[in-house]
Length: 374
Image (cartoon, rainbow, N blue to C red; front, side):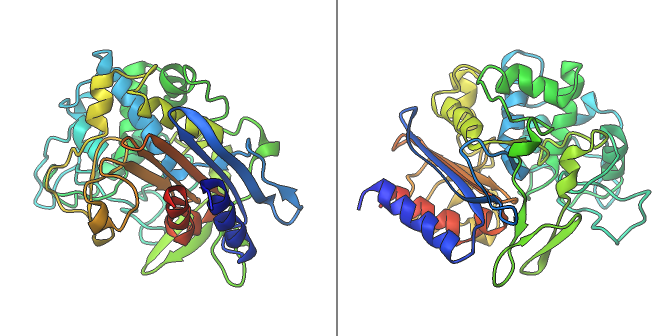
């Protein structure tokens, strides 16, 4: 069975088993697309099928795009990895639990070693006037108001001493906007999306008719998300607001706020896989693809992986139980997406779906990855 047949079988089974509602899968090798398929429904209730150009809410697929925008500014000499965040955002001066104000750098933000966390004030835990908004929940807050609130929450640890997934790229987005003197979307468009011809990847929806309905894991079949919608992921609760993408008042979330298509994301990842050409220098791209956190421990589920500037870096395929080669960089998006770049095998993969969280961390992306390698 060749790769195409293996991928088709995984996609067909996931849809037949009602684990995934709709999906777009694209694979490239040496910059050329070798597999592209859209399957299932973008709107199950209306019987509307997924197309290759279906638009999805990207969630954390936003992160590497915004990280790349920051690295363009580093290449241009307008930003330095060792610069302090507070140099650009004077209102963002979080403290540790003992009242110290540590120096949080651009590199700390890129690598999720800043001391920040996610969901520092979960819905219902504090009054609306102090609650911090993440990029998944609707809000009318701008950068300064939201991140002033975030700065009032004690850091989880001293920057540089641990790794923890966090709102760091949201803060980085505010810094990009400040340095560029424009909105975050305008900066992304100028430095990354525009040069790469990413016509639909924005902090707004370019064509609402092509936007997929978001679904959430449920039994016997995924359910269309309400707004807001809560998904239980073990002991963790994930809060979604599908309507956020339509709210122009909501701060442009560098960590989760974009919408886009599989062809756009493939174009972006192909550029990264090609030494960053034409958006980044080869030197900064190579650095971004390598381990940037040293020996800092990550979560138990991240065994065998460290972290760079774009996502997880596969250090030990055996320990990670992965068919990918060492040096593979990967990440995903909780609305239902996963991607990887395998430099050794010259493979770029984009797995997008409208089903959270199966399409992100469930069996579906793992099965697709195995199907790529056979």
